[in-house]
Image 1 (cartoon, rainbow, N blue to C red):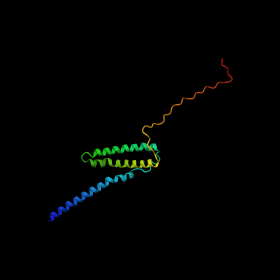
Image 2 (cartoon, rainbow, N blue to C red):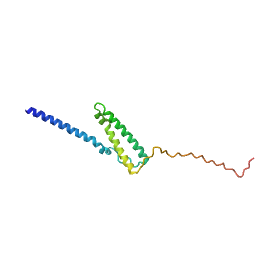
Image 3 (cartoon, rainbow, N blue to C red):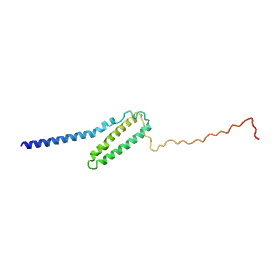
Image 4 (spheres, rainbow, N blue to C red):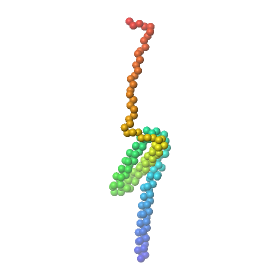
Length: 142
């Protein structure tokens, strides 16, 4: 009876450890959204104008999508969740932090998206102004 009680206690203890480990890992997965700005320089976008911020936001969105796609692809293989976390999670969190700070600067500067069909005004080249050569008043043409 004592051996049976000891085995069941070990089994319950192992189950408790597994559940606690799962809860800790689940908590780590959700914490990345709140910790993301901690991995980026908060003053990076202070001096950016709206055009620079627009370019930066588009680049960060593309990088975030690339990293998300790579993480999803890595998770399809054997041991993919571990590979995904080790290979891409830190970059993903850093890029998300940068994107959040760029968004904050975008709102603070009251920037607006440029329409996709808007082209910069084309400057028409002006012909050079050519003046006639000055004539000498004292000389006569022969």
